Length: 428
Image (tube, rainbow, N blue to C red; front, side):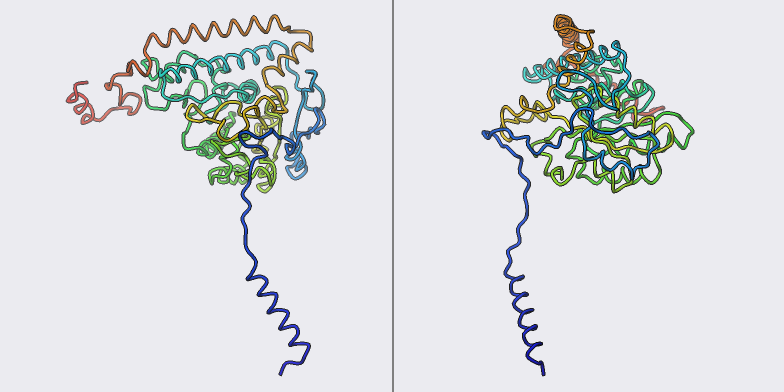
């Protein structure tokens, strides 16, 4: 028989159990700081002062740099001066070339966006506000390194000298399209420029990049790989598979997460960005993880060179989170005014990457507002002329695509005789 003390404890446990059963469970649904019609609020964005984040040695062990996943590597201050340990040694000519490539990328985006709205193309994706990431990283990597992009890295191709006329041909789905209609308008591919075909199934490029890098190492090659995904894609399994293999086998690869704050219509908190920076996910895999100002051309260049040097020294992969902002809609199928504040882009605290690089060159005494305006006009005229040339070969509405006769070209080394006969029977 239970004594009084035991009976009291039993009663307490019973009451506690009732309290637990009576508790109502709730889920936390992340919400952005501001929706459409609300005032903009970036107060929760974790920023470091320019030049304040330390630069570890390339050979430093990953465990010694966990703080870099939580700080923000910045080089350019508000006056355009480059300060701190991450300042890269870049000649003015290289910076001017980067500025030109960013301006060409933005002008190309603007013309193709207008063309889609005019019914001349079916689909387009702009990278407005994110140009520094692709262009600066193209400059920081070797031209022979292999790139596994997402659909907002057109600046990689432009910086590597890929003909914009061919890009336009693909957007228009006309006879200039080098992929002959086998890909969506913005999903470019070029073996000659080390640009792996863009995948619409996002996340696959991360594991493909790791696999390619492993193969490069196994074959005794000297080329490394780099890949890009948006922050929303970090919630997919492919992201974690890639980090596992990259960590275990020390694959010579740079894995870039472009955190532009918004996926298609969900803000970065839905993918876990409020709990911790996306860079911090590399810590659990034993990878160096860097968080960088994605609108700072010099900072992006510096961290990419650091990660590339590490990969080339057989020290393995690096995860980089680029903090930036998608100024435009997710694509031409998206209306961002439905889910975010209308003036949010103009109040982004890290500014515009083109304006910031321009300010830096002016601060160095090697640029001016007049020269910048002249370059802008030159680039706009160049892109406009290329657009006229591209449209002379047809647009989507004109239905001037490649002949069905080409459907098996570049597919088989030796085409099967039955396919040849079927093509002939179809009249091609």
